[in-house]
Image 1 (spheres, rainbow, N blue to C red):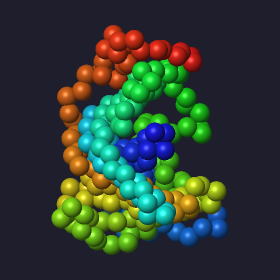
Image 2 (cartoon, rainbow, N blue to C red):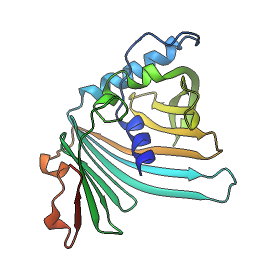
Image 3 (cartoon, one colour):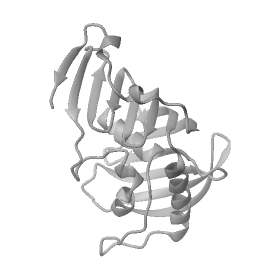
Image 4 (tube, rainbow, N blue to C red):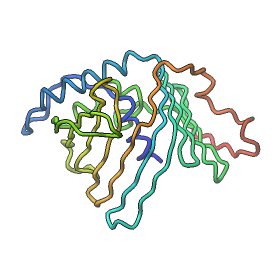
Length: 221
């Protein structure tokens, strides 16, 4: 779930800002930056975001192909993700991670350290500092003209060696992405619906134990 969540945030809520790049690496593609800047500007202008997405796993040996759907809401520093029997709630100060199978929820304080990834960080220059990127050109995705951006991590110790990010050419919204792992596995997310400024109440980002009879609460705060 953590890997999927991090990947989902990359797709649905990121920002790109020009920053100095690590020495010894090539230069980022200015044409790719134009696409990323346009997508970033649109996302930052939204007060709330609701997405319905499809997550797909393709194993290296070709024996496993999993496809699952999920939803995500974002509002400032608040977010909520529902996916594969799990839910993550965050009100900006606390995070609740609920597992339906065990009927258990873990509660923790939001970690704002440099090593963690949160939606608010993804609206800054987080990925611009971590990736070298270039524009591969136009492709067709679900019948729509889409621009593909290839992103290579500066840190070669990452478990993946490449990310393909897709941006709708007409409306500049993120259409999806694919992560290529070093172990041969491939993870992709396709954004089925992207609803900006959706009506989202603040209580949707707080876990309400009354709605989950018998839930075991593990408070790690």
